[in-house]
Length: 383
Image 1 (tube, rainbow, N blue to C red):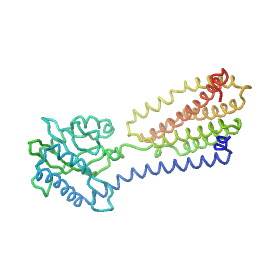
Image 2 (cartoon, one colour):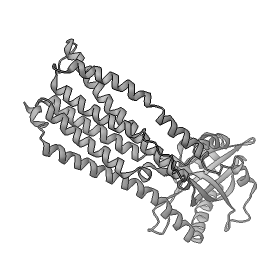
Image 3 (cartoon, helix red, strand yellow):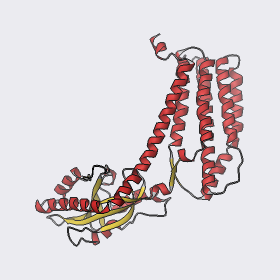
Image 4 (cartoon, rainbow, N blue to C red):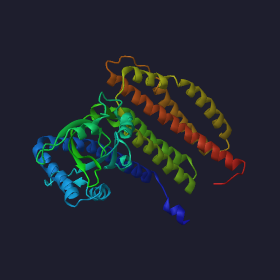
């Protein structure tokens, strides 16, 4: 009885829960967009305060080199010290972005990373690190220079007050976005003759966002509204047609949460911009799945015929969900060929992909409901 009171629902409560979910979705999407703008703010600060940042980073790198030389440390001792102090915070309190120091040790012809913000890179050669970033760079016209650290090593400093600079493209470890960076660097050498490169960089151009987009910016808001409205309407159908029980209340809430979780997960996806040929191929693959419509129709009609007259609540619930899913799936087959740009093709594909997945997910609820019905009918379990 206590558990029943904890999940006592009514129409008003379900609508309030739905409104709260929508508000959370909006806040999450807004926060995600704000994070993307954050890197642009950081880049603008770096560009407008280049002289100040160069001076700050030069001082900090020289401090690390002086600590190595003055204390006559081995590389291992010095590397441990730097790892504990590898972040550089700006003296300007308006700048919240920390800059990170990296160290590479020269081993034969290879340069092995020993200190980095991305701890997965530590212990890897530069060539292995470049290989690990290739997938993130493939949709941009830029590549990470496979000889970058070697160029740094050969580009020796002429003095402590002005360290050499080098421009390159990289995957920002804070955001995972491809950026153009400037790094200040210098060589180091310990008391045993072990040597390598130490450096620190800052972002000066956002490359990744030029060649990528978030689904929330591309999806048609009318389709988004349609799917969202269906989640609350079908949740109310499940609640109204089912028996007044704890199980039905849980089922209602699970449906509402899972369908809205899918919506949130989908619209917050990020994708790289591809070619017209790739987009058309993706679009055609969605349209070609109309055979699934025939299969689903046959299976669901069979399910409905089996439960009709035995479980009228499940029959009405499944019928309503199936009708909604067919409406959604049929809308993905709407033919539109008046595309004027790759943006139009991409938006059409994202809309159809969203609706197609949504329709399939609705049918999965029908199948799950039928399996539970079978389990109860043949006395495997009782809910």
